[in-house]
Length: 351
Image 1 (cartoon, rainbow, N blue to C red):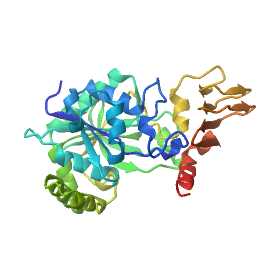
Image 2 (cartoon, one colour):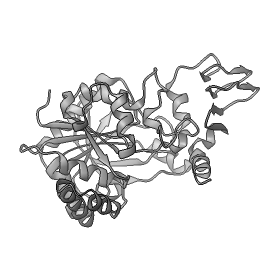
Image 3 (tube, one colour):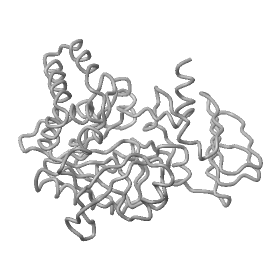
């Protein structure tokens, strides 16, 4: 196993696009949708094949610390980094890095808790390749997934110079691109120079903190104030300081600005499980390409996802729809509208 390598699992997402199954008290990473396990459990199992258990840390909101400890048997409180509130990924990553004490300047591997990974042997080899690259110098390493469709729900990475070409090619990153419209996504697919941005990272602790000091100096100073208050056991000052932190993603704040970003091509199967449509892509389907969860009655239904939980659900003569019925509500939409489900979640949460 790699010494002085840590895995940080970010589990702060709300998963609003998985309404009505996902709720504030049980967000997406805790949902047992795939193979009877939650996404956070699957992520933890992958991490244990990269580093020992005592070098895996979760960063999560205070309100979800207890459910996490109940979900992962044997996980100790010392492995959980709690945020008093979510301030996006730059704060999450910087705060966690400052808390990781290791005289050897450890490599930190960052995973979101809500991704699905297939071909895990290839995944691990790609991770180890990135770890070796991060050890070599001041490299911020990410993973790009070769697109197989014109996806409009993901950000993209445009690659430049090839640094190394072997089983896992390494590229210098030219730029990051936000979620495109369909026309642009088709152009990216045809180009061959664009990859899906996986949102997974590898870097040395000193490197990410130095880059944050360069591009997000106010955030880094705020994080140091939070750490000072935490160590002084001044809970009120800690919470107030954290609430004032700049809300910005690590992509916007650092990755899009740094000149030291490299991409390892990930030839494993990856999906960020961002919407109900993701489940259709990765789950086993019936002869009509449906994903059926629970015990609904269906007839003449094709290419759809139907989930019934504690409700009698019947669906007739539809194609390409998502129907989810739980005790929290009922969702009916076309697959094309899966990205917009969070609008429903926010509407009902404001009531």
